[in-house]
Length: 194
Image (cartoon, rainbow, N blue to C red; front, side):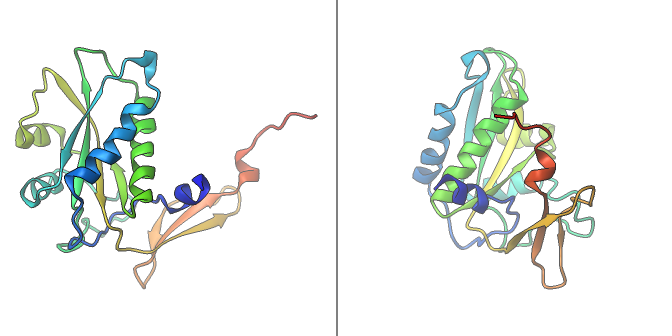
C-alpha cells in the first residue's frame, strides 16, 4: 500500500554498509524516474548510478549530512551509503525545475523502500568538487541533487506535534532519530463545504 511505503520512506542517514546495492537494483530504482511527469515533458534530468566503494567514498566527502544535528559529521565507517544516484540536469535540453528533482527523487526513494532499502535526498553538496571527482562536464550538466542509498541502520520515529511547535529533527540519548510532524488538521487550511 502506498501509505505504508510513504511512512517507511524516511531521510535515512545511517546504513548497513555490509549490504551492497547491485547495479541491477540501481537501474530498477532509476527506471522509475523515467516514468514520472516532468516540466513541459522535457525530461531534462539524467542519472549517474554509483555503487563502488571507491566512488562511494569520494562522493561521501562532498556531502553535508544533517544541518539540524550540529554535533554530527555524518555516518561513520560501516554506516555509510552503499550507492548513490546523482540527478543531473542536461543543459542542452533545458533548465530543470526543482519540482522535477523532487518528483523523481521521491519516486526513486519509494522504489528503494519497496526493495527494502532507504535513502536521503541531499542538496548540501560541494558540486564543483563532486563534478571534478566524477569528471562531470559542467558545460553540459548541472548537478541538481544527490540521493544516498543503502540498507537502513537506524530507527526513525515520527511524532505528532501541536501547532507552532519546533519541527527540528533530533536524536535522543539512545541515538533514535525523531522527526516531528505537524497534524493534518494544521496543514489543511480550507475544506469545501459539500
